[in-house]
Length: 261
Length: 315
Image 1: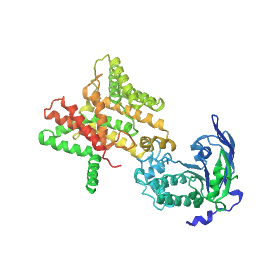
Image 2 (image 1 turned 135 degrees about the vertical axis):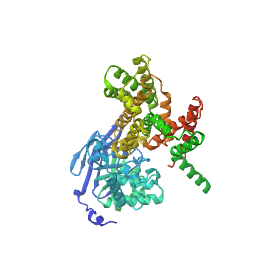
Image 3 (image 1 turned 30 degrees about the vertical axis):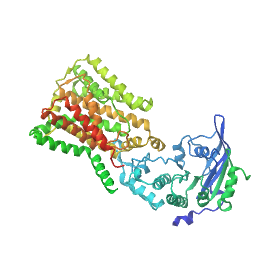
Image 4 (image 1 turned 90 degrees about the horizontal axis):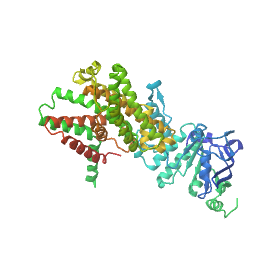
């Protein structure tokens, strides 16, 4: 798709593992949401995380993005053990999350949303002003690199379609030199065309070298997009498959437990 | 079908520009009905009279942009005025007395901000409470009596002018430009709009929502302190009066200016024009010899009409 695609295409060596979560446990009161789940993500790949409701996907993702702290287990990011107290700290380590609600402010423009909380300013002391030109230009370039139907950055988010909003949220997550972007059901609320566009955005993001963790209930989408699939059941990651070596039917069987890992 | 769309377009145009259109209509109507309305003397008087409301409307605009409301704004102004009067009476001089007024008003704002941002009290209830507190304190510390202030600085403030622009309206204009710059050109202003637009998303993006909320109530109260000095200058005394009119008009000016009470959409110019419109309305009715009793009625009608129009604002 782009020139960088060939250069960034990964080999399958184990050194390509950018994130490995090992034996993660997390309980809420008496409920053991995670009972020692382990997953790995490779550089430049889309890793899918699937499982039935209550399998522990969301809890695992929240542990990775700093929302929850695991009770035990280790998270190894790019060769070093890390712990995140808050989502902001996870972000500082290069893990961005695109939440289902997208965390956009509808009344603000695209570029304002793009830089919300990390605005570029110039001047000094109390006279710092927003560097609007720079922020508009940067947002425009980064959005344009990812999405074909990128909306003008001076548009209010309120006026964008669902797919465009998703593209803005993804571009924002990718825009800070992030190593890993976690996406929670990125196309759940979208129509067929918009879904295709967003999937293109996700592919472009992968081609640019970012590791994507995709949570999806849509098996066709998982088969279309991902390179590797992790299946969760009962608080554990029970199986992993290369996407090319599995089928939708097998994934369903793994999720329900009809087929043992 | 297309006529419906056209209508909506027209309505949205009226809704977007309710304040300037209303102001122009009022000026035309009043200048036809009263020959004195558009004289330089009357324009000068109107602008000076509008200064206090302009400052209060700007203050209220910051709070309303975050989706809050400051019901204590006029009571805070009164409290600031009384503190100014007492400080001046105690011989502190104009500048120190002005500082006392700002600090006293700011204290009320800090209480508002802490109650709302930290105490999670609804803005309506919190500021209704401080409205009572500030009004009561003003009555208590002044013993219910006006404090006459004969400061030369205040006299200069009321009588001085550049052309037809008196010092009070020049001060209000400077505050307006500053407020516009803060709201639309600084990181803080962007965060004010973000918090009003979507608090949850603001938190997710690392914005210190509580700090922003405290800050807007501090700004509101600080500007009420400035308005307090203008008020003392105009009246020539600090009166423990209950200035309900200023409270209602400050909210009315913001609504006329096209700012939604649900927050998220900031405007500074609109509320300023709204304040000018309300002042022109009162002035015109007075010139026409309409009884004072009809003025709240007229203001009420204008505000309800503007609020109806804002439903048709462009999304």
